[in-house]
Every structure is written in C-alpha cells, then in structure tokens.
Length: 190
Image 1 (tube, rainbow, N blue to C red):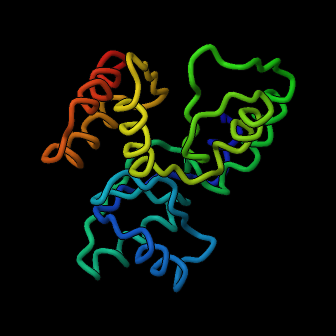
Image 2 (tube, one colour):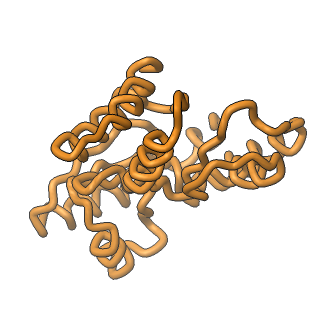
Image 3 (cartoon, rainbow, N blue to C red):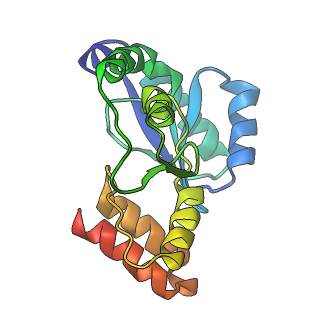
C-alpha cells in the first residue's frame, strides 16, 4: 500500500448519485480509464476512484450537471485498477496463506453470497482491492440471510459506522426485524 501511496496522488470521490449506469456513461464518454466506479453504496451514493487530477476534473464535470460530489480523503483509489501493484503484492501474500473452511459464513461482496470453499475465498481475496464493491446489493442479500437464520453473526471489516448509517438511510422506512440484527452487528464493531 505504501508503494501505491508514493505514486501519482489518488483518492476517492463521494458522488451524491445512485444511478450506477448513468454515472458509468458519464465516465465512459469523457473519463474512460481515468476514473472508475469503486463502490455502489446506496441509491444516493457512489464512490469514484482516480488520480487527484482526474477526480478534480470529474468533479467539475459533475458540478456542471448539478450532481454534488466531494473528495473522501483516503489518499488511495481503493477498488480500482490504480491499485494493481498493491493488489499483486497482496495476492502473493494471500497465496502463501493456508486458508481453511470458515467456522462462520464468509460473505463475499463480489460473489454476493457466502463462500465456504478455501480456494474460492482465496480467489476473491486476491482481487478484492481491484473489484467494485456492491454494498447496496450486499445489504439486501445479507438482510435476507439474517431474516432466514436463527442467530447469525456478521463481522464487517471496514467502516462500520459509515456502513450502518448508509443502511439506515437506505432502508429506515421499510425495515423488518432482521434489519435490527444487521444494524446491531454493525454497531458492535463500530
């Protein structure tokens, strides 16, 4: 990761828009291979990764279309091709690990399902830094898993307070009892 930070300055841009296809079209038309959708967080928020220069230009492009955005300030373009070198280094480390079947279900965002086969888990971990995070889709899937289970536990590795707030903002009006379990899991690790 330090190697990626020493390269061209990069970041994430929070875009107040939930139209993944529309945003993808905007990117493709003028910013192809310069910025990349990295996270689809909710119906109102998508993160875009890129170099600082490209993100600043893209932000102005969005502003002209009255789409609000702001830098996230991570200093890294997570879940984008800009992290190829870091991802390759991480993949080499993952390849040396012994991965055994998990004792609790391992939910994989990219697969949108629980994985229990060690090699499938390894494949997804190897490319996680490069893959688009579909948090909006995952919230729906995990909520459904919890509604069918009796005591499932979830451990989110990431920004739990942020993810909990996104979940509450997205689903507050239509929450069901299983949602409280999901929110509690996110609060415990916040």
